[in-house]
Amino acid sequence: MNSQAALKLQAPEPGSSLLSSEIPDRVFYGYQRLIYREAGIYLGPNKKALLMGRLARRLRELGGPSFSAYLRQVEEDAAERLRLLDAICTHETHFFREPRHFEFLENEVLPRWRAQGHPGTGVRKVRAWSAGCSTGEEAFTLAMVLRSHLPVEEGWQIEILATDLSTRVLERARQTLWPVERAREIPTRYLKAFMLRGTGSQAQWMKAGPELRPLVRFERVNLHEEHYPVVGRFDLIFCRNVFIYFDAASKARALERLVEHLCPQGFLFVGHAESLGAVTQRVRLLQSTIYTPGSAG
Ligand SMILES: C[S@@+](CC[C@H](N)C(=O)[O-])C[C@H]1O[C@@H](n2cnc3c(N)ncnc32)[C@H](O)[C@@H]1O
Image (cartoon, rainbow, N blue to C red; front, top):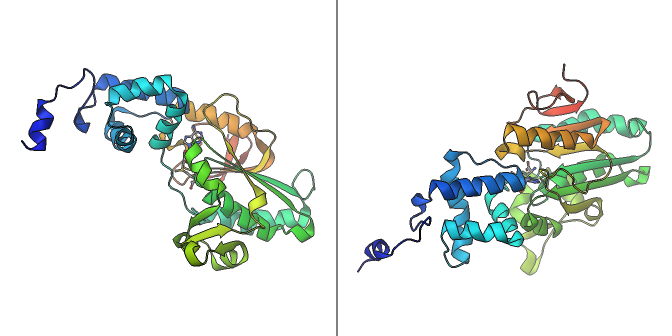
């Protein structure tokens, strides 16, 4: 008997699917509700294939429970819910992603701060937040740019908070270790100044150097939660390509909370496909995808 025939002979559990194209609507809507409630991520009906694709590996690891059985499991088990969210989210990231943002810092912001001190306080301290940091490339890009332009010899202190919903990407980010091919994304002057290349059995890895590592602190923060353990205000907030799967309501709520943490003369950077015009009135556009506090009107 071929495997196709064997598959047809098995009686599916009610609400389960043997073929991935058969995830029942009722089960899909169960996942949709749970994921929205937990993370603010809204999976519209056209995201059924995406959900199935992203869960396939985890279901295989667990020995192949049905989508329906796995939904029951994640409803009851907080640790497994984290794994579900890990699997659902897109974690793609790069060093110097959207280079225009870093050019803006290098050319328009940091020379001014270096000359005048911190806007508002004059103190030589800068705080930045990479919110939705994935595996750390964004936070360490910021670390390289800030450290280069705000040198320690001039008394500049730099603090970068890097947060994500996913514990799996945070574990990787904390290692500050990336495949050496990623070096191509980093301009040579930064690469030479701040990154270490592995040797021998480590030759395929690149590590953040000792000057950078103490600048970045990683924490788990779910931006969908009403209260999260982030304290104080930041001069720079990068929240790029995080709200892509949020709906308008969850995005608006998360942004309101984020803007609370922005210094009056700070800057908020969002992803290239994101616009805040219709979402919050508390920031105004400086240039495409770069905002500062103030009335949009
Ligand atoms: C596509 S990555 C973007 C990484 C980086 N910001 C960039 O632009 O290169 C999106 C990240 O947002 C995180 N994320 C999604 N929903 C989140 C939430 N509710 N709270 C915090 N982080 C979330 C995901 O885990 C993922 O690592």
